[in-house]
Length: 293
Image 1 (cartoon, rainbow, N blue to C red):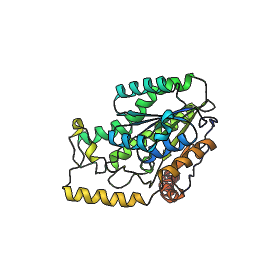
Image 2 (image 1 turned 180 degrees about the vertical axis):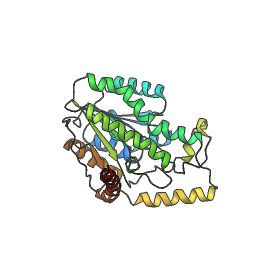
Image 3 (image 1 turned 90 degrees about the vertical axis):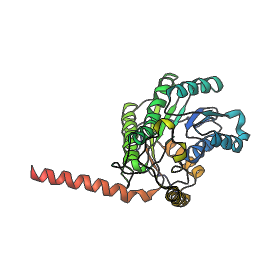
Image 4 (image 1 turned 180 degrees about the horizontal axis):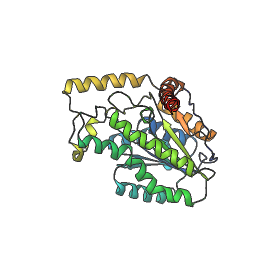
């Protein structure tokens, strides 16, 4: 797999991935987050892994135990501001000022807009979009203030650039992440803070295994399937994603892309036809309207 991304960022943040620099990655105990966190530990960085799942945190902590002096694991629900406040205090106490903020946590729940209920909207928006804005609120002041090279990476999705079947709510949140980071990219031009947007396609993760994690407060759902059908869908999703990019390999590629100064970061070049279809649809409509003027 390769990372392809244009245009280049207007500012490059050299030195972020040096030994001793400090990173926080949300959703960091599995999948893309764990791959990225592991790749940064390989660089000699101090890495805090935040995740809502205690079992994943325990597994990641055991796997990365040889980095113990540079590793911090935190139980972090990105939808709760008080968890972010605790995380900011814990990172500062253990490692000092933050240099890399990886806003990666997300849940992938698929279903139609017409079939959805309020709990579906609230859960996906709270994690996938507010999980990013809460992180920025918690760490952006210090990233701007300490004067050292810093970088912000947010994980959107190919669903943040195009809409897949039954991915309406998910894409609403991920399009928001894309818009947010494109805005920050422009606002931080020529500053010491770099910004990148990660739009993965197929990566070998557990992104669709989150139904059992749904909080009670968001239990009002229109996406209730018979257990056998739900299990079959999960199995098919796992099979598809198992053929995707290896998370650690991809984590290393993400570091290379950010070091180059890339803003958009994709899993591989296979996404190009999908992006071209959307581009061509927009342009052809615009041309038709121009011809009518």
